[in-house]
Image (tube, rainbow, N blue to C red; front, side, top):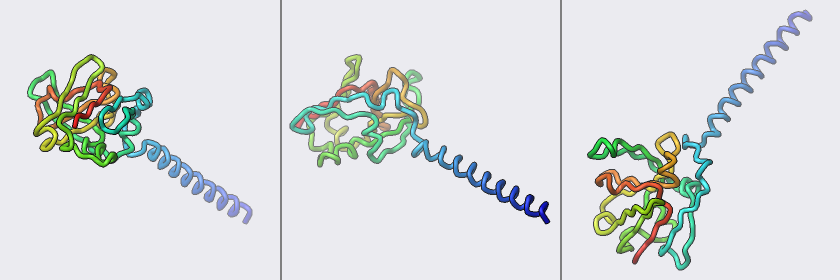
Length: 171
């Protein structure tokens, strides 16, 4: 009879241990959030924003990830452009946070750290989906692309700027 109690205790301990392991595995997966890449090395890097509000301000990749995000993939026309897979909010989603939409502006400029500029105007402000990407599909952006890159899937790859450090809105 004592042997039976001992076996029952061992069985109960095994079940508890199995349950704990299962819970820990689920928690470790939940720690990955929504499957976003680890952007801790650049997630707090400021991106200057001018012309959207009365005062210039900064946003970070971490703040952009708090918005509703999309995942998109596009292939450029050249081998150099390649295929790009990214995740981030749409420009329209970002602007909605400030009560705006892209058609409210004459021009939106995205300036890269190396001086490259992507200027959106006309149909780019009304007809194209613009992704403010802060991660690859499952990995962080490459070091030269951080803290943000643009992806406009239907546009030529020259419009896919990266290393974006400043955004200027012109009404």
